Each structure stands twice: as structure tokens, then as C-alpha cells.
Amino acid sequence: MHLDLVAWKNLQEHFSSALNLAIDFLDIHGRPLVSTGTRTPYSQLLRSQKMGSDLIAQCIQEHIEEVRITKQPLLYTGFGSLQRLIIPIICNTHEIGVLTCEFAQKLDRTQLKDLAFLTGGDQQELTSAFYDSQHPISIDEVQRSLHILASLAPTYAAEKKELTSELSKLTLIKDFTQAIRGILDLTQLTNTIERFLEPVIKSSSTTLITYKDEQITNVYHSEVQYPKHLLNVDVALAKIAAQTKTGEYIKDTSKDIRLKEFFEKPRCILSIPLIQQKNILGCVIIHGDYIKELTEDDFEVLSLMSEYLSVAVSNALSLKEVERLSITDPLTGLHNRRSFNQLLEQEIARSKRTQEPLSLLLLDIDHFKNYNDTNGHQAGDKLLKELAQLIKTTMRKTDIPARYGGEEFVIILPNTSLIGSEQVAEKLRQAVEEHDFDHAHKQPLGHVSISIGLATLRPADTQETLIKRADDYLYKAKERGRNQFISSKRIEESVN
Image (cartoon, rainbow, N blue to C red; front, top):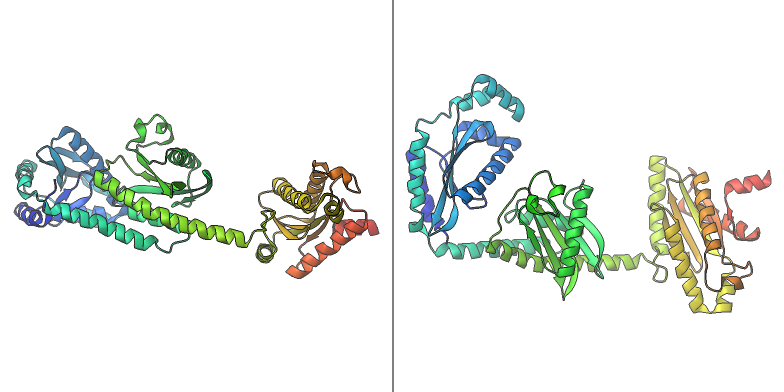
């Protein structure tokens, strides 16, 4: 059951005018439906400060929950010593919302000074606003008047509001689909989700987790700094959603045995799986600032939004896959040569800007032609793939390996000096020598091995000169018997 809000507003304005008081009609979730009258200067000043506005809204939400339980009027003192009266509106046992109004309780000058310090407001302005906000009508009289107003609610119940509600939902869905259409950046998409879900659930953070073959691939947050313990919560809920392909709404984390230890204050959490053609694409996890009931209308909106969101995520993931394929060597899964050239150019520019060292390893498989001729090209391809995997597991997370061409590989080592890069090169050379490759015993050296040329960026270097020097050192490693690395330092040592 809903109210005809146009007619109701006219009625509420009469009461506001008679009482000389601002009255708010809020729904059961604390969202404003009708506001009439003018707030006192003191109330306006408190609400003009973000801290004051947030605390007042949170306090109202918490006390509405109490009124919904007791079904009785409530008078409480909140932030800035504002007294607030809350009257429930009930039609035939159906909760429609609440009426609220506020009064400035008496404060002395010390209390006003403390409040000005807390909010960052001007003390004189706050004091003046406070004394201009004293209300001549008693709270008891106001309560009796609001009781009368609330009792008139059944008279204004109308099916018209049902239509208005449907139009509101359709408008929200239309605006949402237009907003996400064309967004292919998943971080931007996550922020857009949070913005549009604000009317449904007062979100404090939103996480988008993507899947491929039922495995998590990426995590995107609406917050730049996201606590690790919350990430663990989100990942766990996303895994449940992926397995069951159903969402979950946790109204109060303090009453959930799985989650209560992770949060200082109770909040609500909503997980929404994103499914397309029975495949799980990802999951959206939304954290609400406080406990909140979701209505059937809310769940209907979320269901519709999830369908459109699944399409948007699918499009974004398809683009990412195309981009990945364009920079990836299809055989080894490493960066291809085109991608390597772009990355090396970026790293050289960064190194020169930050004055951090940069090194480059250029390597190839010793006697690879012999391996191919002896064991066949399929075995050769398997060797390349296995070596690529060994490089990935041996290198550090910051290193950038790529396939340079044929049996040649290249590895960019950001923030790595000559000595550090020699250690990395030797570690890789030894790992390859000790690895149990198929048919390794047939190689001339009795095992699979690599030769490595190592160059560290010099001030006058370009991309071409750095690669050329690494290539020259690789050639010298071949000349000197293979299965080794050569650097400028080793060249100098051999000369001396």
C-alpha cells in the first residue's frame, strides 16, 4: 500500500504551516518522500557540514529501525542536541513510513563552543542560529498534531502510487542501462554500479569480481585503498555465488556467524552473481553502511540491473580478451614482440625519469635446431612452451618476459642494476639446466641449456642500442661455449 504523494504533500504543508515546523515523511528505509516547511537556521547550519549531515542521517536510520519494531512514537536527542520526534505511519498493519520533525534542545555557550570546534563551523554563527531556532510550541502539542496527520494516511492510500513506483523503477533501469552502455573499463563500471545502487542500498563500497572457467581472474573496487580482510570476505561470498549461481543478502553482519568478526559496526552485504547463457561471468559485492531491509521492489530492480550488467561485463571481458590476444604470443602465452617493444619504450622512459636502473636479458635455447631436427617440431613447440612457463615461475613479479622470435626470449628487469640482473640471469640459467625437459639427453651438452646476453641501460641508450648490446653479448655467450650469460662486467673481467 502506498500514498498519493501529491495529495499528501498538500495536507502535510497545512500541518507544517500551522505548527511553523519542518516535517519530513520518510519511507521505512529512511529515504525522503515528502518534505514540507522550512528547517530552523540551526538545523540548516548543522546539515551544511558534511559531518553533521552524515551523523543526522545515520541517527535517523537507526531510530527508524527501533520505531518499526515497537510501532510506537519515539523522541530522542541526536547530534548537536537536536531532539527528533518520529511517528510511525501504518495503514491496515502495513508499514508505509514515518513522520519526523526536530527541535533545538537548550545548550549553553560552552556546549555551543565545543560543537563549533567539532564541526569546524563558526561559533558566533552557530550561537546566533541556535537562539533564532527556539520553537514556541511544546513537543507534546507537536506530537498530538503529527498523530492526527499519521492517522489520515489510509484516506490517502491510492493505487496511483503503484503506477508511480513502477515508472520510477523503469526510469532507474533505463538510466542505468544508458550509463553502462559503452563502458569497457571495469573499474569505471564498478564505480557506476555503486552510484546507481545508492537509491536501493546505501553503499559504502562496491567490488566487482570477474570469472573465467569458474576461476577468479580479476577484482575491481570502488575504493582505491581497500582493506585486505574485506577483500577476503568479498572473495568468499563471490565463490558461494559462483557455485550456487544465486545471490545472497545479509541484512546484519553482526548476526552472521561467518562475518561478525570482520566488522566493528553492523552493516548489510549484498552479493549479485552475473550470469550469461548459464555461465558465471562474475559477482558484484555491495557493502551497505548500516542494517537495511530490502523490499520486493528493491530485489526486482536488482534482478533487472544484474541482467543488463551481465551484458556489460561480458562486453568488457570480450574486449580485454581481444586486447590480451593482440599482445600475447599464442604458443607461449608470453608478451609478443610488438607488446615487448611498447613495454620496453615505457620502461626506458620511466627509468630515465626516476633514475632507477633498468636491465635487459636476451636469451635463446642452445642447439634448438638440433632439438627440432631430432625430436620433431611438435616436441620443439612443447619445449618452447615449457621454457616459457619456467621463465614465468623463475622470474620476479615485476619482471616482464616476452617471446622475441623463434627460440629467442627477452626479459625486461625494471629497477634492476647490473649486479642484480647478473644474479637473475644465473638463477634462470641454472633453473633451465636442472629442469627435466623431454629428450634433454639427446642435446650436444647432454641437457637443454640457454645462452643469455645481459645489458643495463646507460644514459645515452635508446631502445635500439640497449637491445643491440644485449644481442651482441648473447652472440659472445654462444662463441664462448653456450650455457652461460655475458654482460659488460664479464667482458671487462675477461680482458683484464
